[in-house]
Image (cartoon, rainbow, N blue to C red):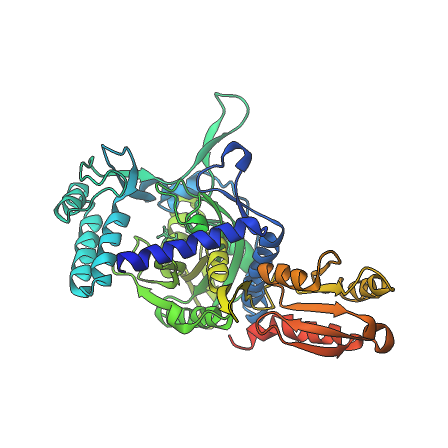
Length: 488
Ligand code: ATP
């Protein structure tokens, strides 16, 4: 990316962050105390959008697939869980400090940014060579080699502009705390860094009690916590975030077919939500995690470049086998079709609710000039829009508010509706555009005569006259998850 292009992209992110704050989507956490780095709160419209996205994911998983069920496991888990999963020993990021600015960076991210700069300058080969060299060094845990790479590539600290780097060290990303009130009895436990392990330790409980047969999946939405070294890019990288993960248990040997299938299904899901094909790409991992035999990311072109939104991993039988070893409890499944016991292999789909939120917001944000006037609106898919319709009486008198309230009453049990009577109708339309309400329903004097209203469509600003009796059906049709599902 050329420098001026980069500045424009950063300006776009800044606009989106400012919009998110000003119109009730996302605020810095505990802002009155100047915030807490990499922690954010969702506001009135943000929480609606996030809930809709979570519900859409949940229902895609559990309703469109009769072999997937959900669970809700606790955030705290027995500490041995994280020994077995490998997180205590190896959930590390390589970090490096600049001695002049005293700023800390992730060594791999510095190198990836350099590779992206080569790629943007048209030197794909050099970018690839650099990434491969980094992959080899990290694989060999050669941290001195990673530092040499940073120095040889003349990577500088963006703050101090110098290459005065410390050694590269490993940093464990798990937060720990104590359970138990008496100091001597207290033991260290962790805030889960991923939701997946809550699924693995419940594999047999769910399989037996929900009478599932392999292949089957378990889905979960929940908080996860990582002490990220570098927190940046708004809600892209948070220390407290939410994951939506699904572990799909399959017969050993069939995992790579299922991996392929899930990769395609998940890519389709993003497109069905209205993300343009050219803004999505698939990134196959070269360096595989210790548990995987295939892995890829679905990346979205954020204002700061293509970045991971969702990971799809073929996790082999690593997790269940390891829990079997540590817990000494068999994690086997008896497959009646082939008359065999085995530990299933697992395909995981893992997406952050907050990253999905950011992608949806970036994709929806439109700031355009129409007839010499600037117009900003959020073009959310109606199925996930925080507010589905605003009911707006043209004036505050002549019985129009009463009529408008009748309409609210008829719709509010099925749709999130806003009623607003203050300010001119134009201003009220603008306000709804800014929070992405797909339909504005105006109640005027004609409404009192013939029970019709005007619907104003957010994206086109076109208006049409519709009978009140048809409103419920029209909204239900436009906002139904079916609109998204039928494209998956
Ligand atoms: P990254 O390389 O960006 O650190 P990761 O590969 O460690 O991500 P996974 O462990 O595969 O991520 O987690 C699965 C998903 O969880 C990611 O695709 C992302 O959507 C989300 N996620 C992970 N870490 C964070 C975070 N710190 N803040 C917000 N979302 C996150």
